[in-house]
Image (cartoon, rainbow, N blue to C red; front, side):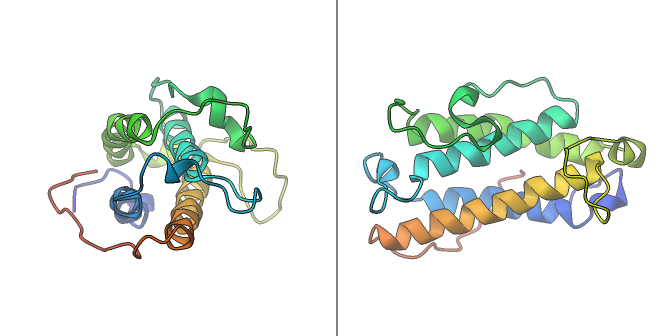
Length: 174
């Protein structure tokens, strides 16, 4: 495992790398057409899920000090509801964005200090047991990525794709 500055992230680092792998594996073989399918008009489509995943990655990077802008933020920011009138970006465009932001965020996660993680980060939750700081925002982002990967995995099966294969690429360092 890579060396990290803050031991507070010792569980986050492998989770982040695992999510990067899962993201690519769960999307493997999904067609552009199927990525826009909704189930009975009630679900988000995979493109929306992927965009929301990326919005989390960009938000995480921004909170950690990166100044990268998500090219497709207008479609996905803050969990914006799916809007069927939008012409959403393609799966390929979103994957390209993923490969751009992910190594930058990963590098920043390795460099962040305890002091930076302890900084207040108001989220408006106002829950006694949940300190609103950078560290807990990082944890929320990781949790959201888990949720979205599971949703995409379920959509894979509903759309008659094989279940996700766990063919990890150990050479991918983010």
